[in-house]
Image (cartoon, rainbow, N blue to C red; front, side, top):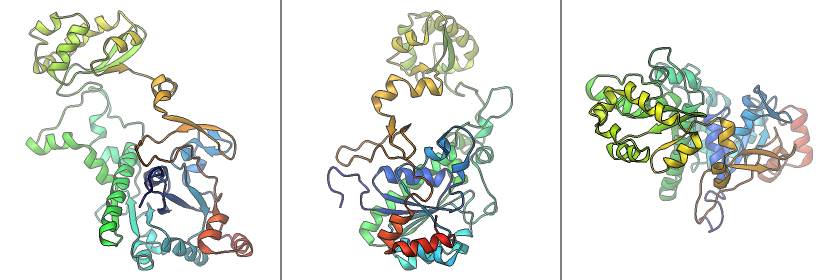
Length: 398
């Protein structure tokens, strides 16, 4: 049972074979929640994202730093019998294991659910793959933008006239990581009732299809598809980008009450009485005319002026990443934190979770490759320095 004042997953151990985003983002959240996450990495290079291009913190890529805070890294070659034996020892002492190999790889490495659950029946085991363990596409590798394309999501994005566009962030990986975290928490609850672990399977493709939600149901309901609307909304207006004196703002008025309030705030009652704009259906049909009218209004003042004036309706400036990260709102909410890293202080995104009684862990950095190999092997596998040195000499451990 979790003691008050300690993170909610304190005392749980996670054996993390995952890499890149979907798995690591999930286990990063588990680490925030207090779990001891042991990240098993290839001794030769580690997680694929450690060497990603772009800015780095003394050799640690920004991409790796985004998804691995709070974990312990063990460089372990599970393709070798000695490395596999260590993985089995760690599985016996873990509550959760997670992998995102292509189907069949975990079994070939001897770290699949069937093998590990025999060693530890209480183990909750999560497999994340691109297209599922079975199915016509299960043998294919998959990356986020391809899944956006194949799920129908990409066809919805982009200008009304022009090419389809992917979302620039890895949103399918992110959705999948959140589904995995939810599934793990649910399985932990079930284990508290049954005493047994279980197998959880997730696919990026499944998560991508599920994320189409109301757009998919639109088609499933009557066979028609939502038209692409660019930055607007296909069935509501005004929902779009508008131009203020010094940049863009986004306005999202999804019902009649909000529109009526908005017209009062901008002192334009005529935009409510005009038959072209009086109802949601009329505004949607006359979207271009309404956009012209509103741009003439917004262009008279700055983004800051309109953000303050329209505080009671959904509206806000279109900010750059830099503007958002350096904003007062981010600072007050504690969404960016400075942590001590082995290579020196660095800024990073913080956990967004807030519990009244079991606070999450904060100010955790991402590990160096193999940073915790010796302590994990000593504490959990009862190895001494000579044994660890021998494994390192054999290339089993880094």
